[in-house]
Image 1 (cartoon, rainbow, N blue to C red):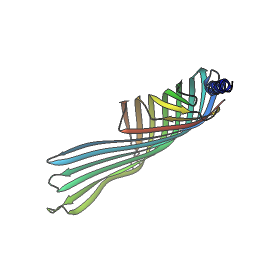
Image 2: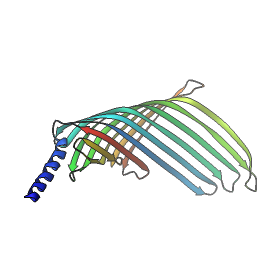
Image 3: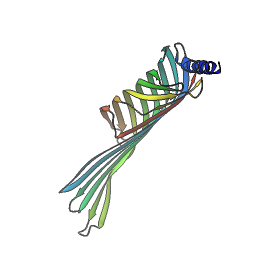
Image 4: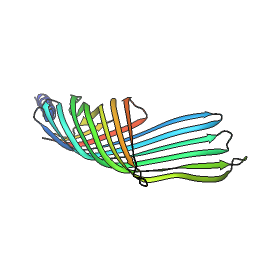
Length: 248
């Protein structure tokens, strides 16, 4: 009799936990995300050694609201604060070493992120759900861009004889619009009936677009740059997302 009651109790608890993901339920929470990407293009051959490096880091913190249209299927929206830092470095070194040129450009920006999404949850156990999230992210941000070029001359022994910095610019005002559409996997852990902790590791597939407008601080001239990209399991990118939710 005790065993029957124990099994019945476990089944009831399991159904109670999964009931939080039923049609008509809401989930409110706070989500955060961090992304880091680094790409390096390098050529090491005579008469020059060439190295081009780009480092990109972004972050996002946003309140989130979800509504379950059907069991385990939810639609939602997050609106919050986002920012990024983009550094571009280029080094060109003569072989044998007589001269080295260096270019540096840095953009920092922050603003508002709006992200509608849909999610579907796959129960794994009483406390864990695997999920797939498909979403669209749009970020509007403003910041500054600055940079310079540097030329170093060397003697026959490889010692630097002179360093000249030129073409310095900034801080120039930059306006950026980022758009990303992607599908990402994740895990929802529910330690209790109402609280959920969510973890994700970035996009399985994603299409991104960025448009930046930079206004020169000295001349007032504006330049526009647009980049797009399609990613499949991009191993150069570390993307981590977390969230804490209250289900009701």
